[in-house]
Amino acid sequence: VQLQASGGGFVQAGGSLRLSCAGSGNIFSINDMGWYRQAPGKQRELVASITRRGMTTYTDSVKGRFSISRDNAKDTVYLQMNSLKPEDTAVYYCNADLRVIGGTVYQNYWGQGTLVTVSS
Image 1 (cartoon, helix red, strand yellow):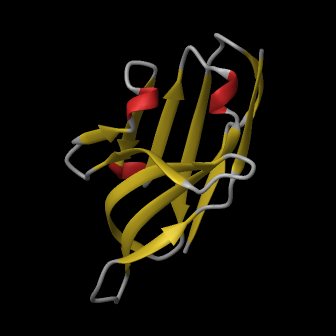
Image 2 (cartoon, helix red, strand yellow):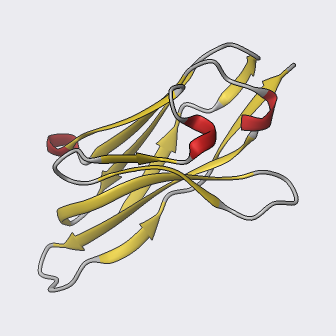
């Protein structure tokens, strides 16, 4: 099982980026999915999360600017980031609670990080 994140890059302040994270492998079902970020010298923090039914939560600093969504048929979660600020610069990681085929419990998985750099 793998979570593959993509979509990071370099953007000027005020710009937009869209991150994607696709699950692959022997996935039976995915519950909550989310995006975390870790800036240099800081702890990893939750940016946004979404339940299988589409209920969302956001950290205060991104409310009104970021939007999380998912495609259950594709085992994919997205993060649309608008009005980006230099303080959004970080490595972004996707995360999912998923159950593999033949498994009996949900386990937490991380994708590899994707770097977002916002210049002022």
